[in-house]
Length: 235
Image 1: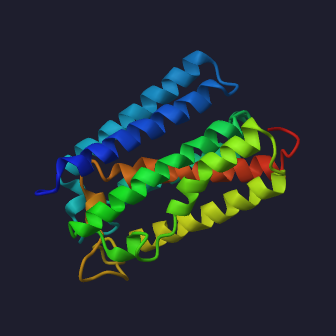
Image 2: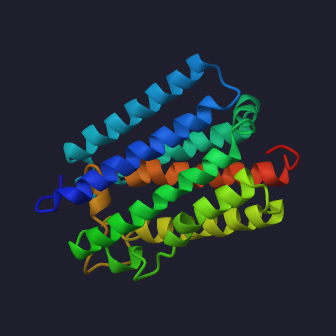
């Protein structure tokens, strides 16, 4: 773990991760999957988070010299999982049964994430460009998510085109910060923030951001965009 960080930052990221997992599980429970399969997925996600915690606590991701970077162990499996879900028949059947309302509400976790990132910047463990004072405008997504969820799915007062546009904008925003974040990590591929690199994500519990929270957020947008374009008759 990073030393000399206030405990409230660590607690914030742990609680945000747990909240993300809880909302995702609620969405899964409301899908076409059986309770047994839903429990299996929850167990698998818990095991994944535990694995990432163990790897980061033991300093595996602190190796910035190896090729490929050890950090790929945190970001590649979630990416592969999404590819499988979107390219297989059973995967598409599952994602097409997920409730878009729950997936939209999930994006509210981006508010505490952005607050946490700002605190990490203050404590010199991530660069300013990863905060809302730099090139990260992702807090817009978190602030507007409750509004979109309420008006779009509870009140049914938003046209699908507006919900679709919101998802596309928010997807671009998160991809923007993902790009800057990855290129700010001290590896051979680093392009930004050499004076204050992105080291926080190499440690527990902040590794859960690129290994879980961010992939889940990206997943919600891809599912929503697919449903609103391909499955436009099913909300």
